[in-house]
Image (cartoon, rainbow, N blue to C red; front, side):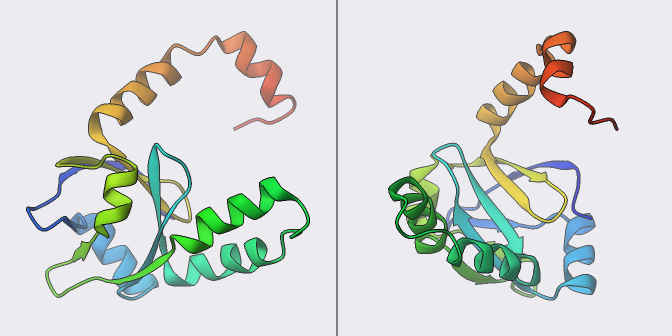
Length: 148
C-alpha cells in the first residue's frame, strides 16, 4: 500500500526525489517505472506502472458517445507519461504537467493506496485544513453505511 504524506522539493530541473520509504517499496514491489498524469487542475497522479494498467483499461472502456467522459478520458490518457526513476530515486516531472497544476518548488507527495497525488505544498495545506473543518454529521450523511 502507498500511504503517507511527504513534503519534498523539486530541483531546478523539475526532478522529484522519491523519499526513501516510498522508493524502497516502489522498487521492491513495482520496479522503477511510474506513470504520471493529470486528473484535475489541482494535482497530478503518479502510479506505479503495474497499478496504472487497470486504470488505463477502464478509461479505454468509457463510452465514447458521452462528451464529458470523452473529455475526462482525453485528460487522463492524453497527459499520461511513462517515467523512469533514476539511480538516485528521482523522476523528471514533465514541464507542461508542472505548469498545469502550478508545481514550482515545494510539493506534497500524498500516498493514496494504489497511487500518489502530487500537490503544491501550500494547496495541500489548504486541502488538509478544509478536511479538518468538515462537519462530522454532514460527513456521516455522505458516508452512509461506510465505516472504517
